[in-house]
Image 1 (cartoon, rainbow, N blue to C red):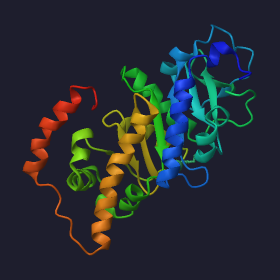
Image 2: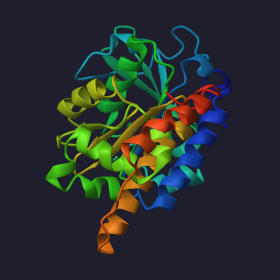
Image 3: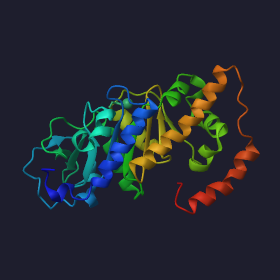
Image 4: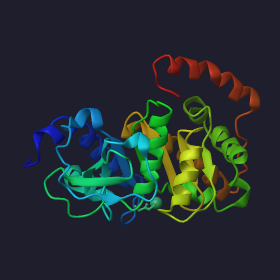
Length: 278
Ligand code: 2HA
Ligand code: ZN
């Protein structure tokens, strides 16, 4: 790698994680064209010296992110295909640094050298979510946005465009969803992709959830790693698949009973003791 060692010396694991998650997104069929984007706050790993990149030009942000001042992020590039991230994450992921006032960012460079394309069009969403994770000292530092087909399909029905009804179906189709997402998934009504409105609504919903479904668009999740964020989308999407499969076979899925859901608290506690849940 011809990149400065100080910036990229310790982020190999995050890049490897990005490649693995991108491959899974492709395998799931959630990554048509350049669908989806991923990011991770790598400040502690990047070990950038004070002022090291101050000579690089700043790009202003529409909304200030003061909690992100001077932080370093790895983020997929605009137009990056997940199949390319999977093959070579160090080329398709860009490193950016947020300015000291949190009002602008510097594209440092791609891990393999010069920065040819800016960060994903959803940069504002990622930044707003990272900002809010830091503001409440959350353990999560990674974000995955993707287009999980069956979860999106459910949001085409008005009856599931509401957190309570959506979670009722998702928890009811498979015990794993209640065990690993006991707080449920959040829901954000349709807003223009890459908009400040979507960024604001998503950050607010992710204050109460670790995964949020975007009506007729996709899902976004936060995790301690990109792999954990991926799992938080994969698990409820499996429930959505089961529900739709039953319906398409003209079966009326029964769903877990209230008593069956309640007794899962025991399993949830077991996994939580290993740090596997919320
Ligand atoms: O990066 O998924 O939401 C392409 C998208 C926009
Ligand atoms: Zn999208």
